[in-house]
Image (tube, rainbow, N blue to C red; front, side, top):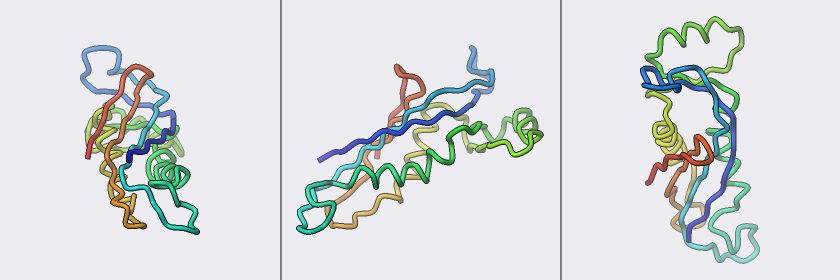
Length: 146
């Protein structure tokens, strides 16, 4: 069985050296979808009976690990020195330094890497993170697959 839940957040970024508008500082309303697979839990007298995982638990993990960190932050490539210098000059600015250029593809991959170890097979139902889908716009997204 596969289950998917979705969370949204706002963040800024830029793609240095991009051939078009994305080389400028800008922001998006991102959506993050987390897909897990596993067997349906069949354990009487527990809250998760009949589920792969409680959606509220899936969301809580993604929220604390990704959404709360990236929401209303500027995601900046660690080699983008000019922008890092600028952001560091702003008092109390929320900046997240990325090891790679913060494209939708790299953000989805980073989210998958972070979340992969966060979902645990607590009930022996073979719980696995299958996919992280990151929407940069309503019509454009990247999928990181397990």
